[in-house]
Image 1 (cartoon, rainbow, N blue to C red):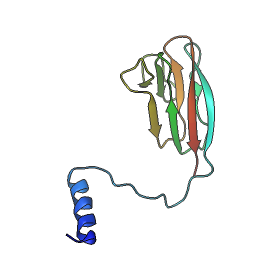
Image 2 (cartoon, rainbow, N blue to C red):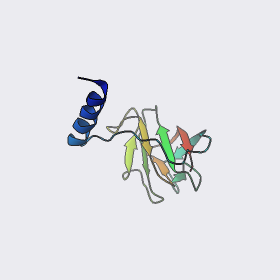
Image 3 (spheres, rainbow, N blue to C red):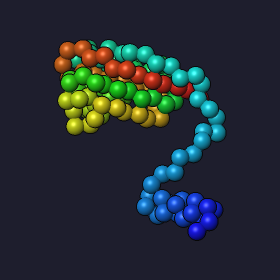
Length: 116
């Protein structure tokens, strides 16, 4: 099987199985920025990325769950991330705003984000 046919076959198989195929961005992200954000369990949820971010990854390596979501996320709603959560420790999404709330205490999460 020549290389062109093999590439076509793999692409067709991926589409048939419903798996996404990676594409390059038509507009590159600006310089990626990284920071640490403290997510508390009381008060208003903490904004993770500044307004205008378009892609974000958050990692929580603590044993305390952190809930990620919109500006009204609480300690029981959203996407749970952390070593002690069923959701895993890493969350990536194409979003403009993301907030966090810890299930107890204060948890620092590592954040990498970029904007178009």
